[in-house]
Image 1 (spheres, one colour):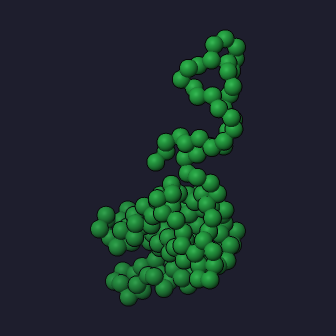
Image 2: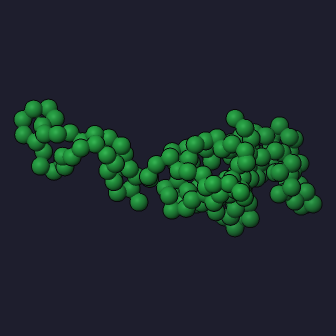
Image 3: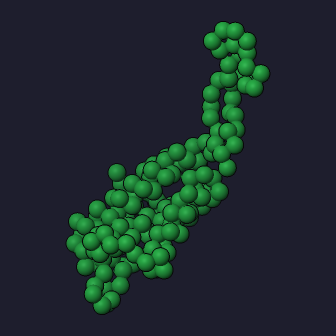
Length: 160
């Protein structure tokens, strides 16, 4: 799986001058694990809408979201999994990143194109299924009057 980030990207987002230290004190192996968890979360959220993993150049928005998630994972590792206060800047960033992931996953937001690139194409319409509808009785007897009968095509399931 190509990486969206490197440990130095996470280091650059953390304040090493903070009293008591920060996740920037973690070894690169710990930061790589945080990055892997973040990238897995991004790919899981966007995989039904975009082809993942993203190839280079990774869309800047995907990289930013992955970075916010990786910083959060690294911070939790540094804090030995003690939760962050809801007003902590790291928690606020991850909340924003996850909200944006949800918006991207359901089509309320789209990925802007990389500079000089075409936009990442979604795999299909959100909330739509390509499936044949049955013609007439499915298992014998009368047709269900509540089930529309039509040919093949996309049918909106109303997931919005």
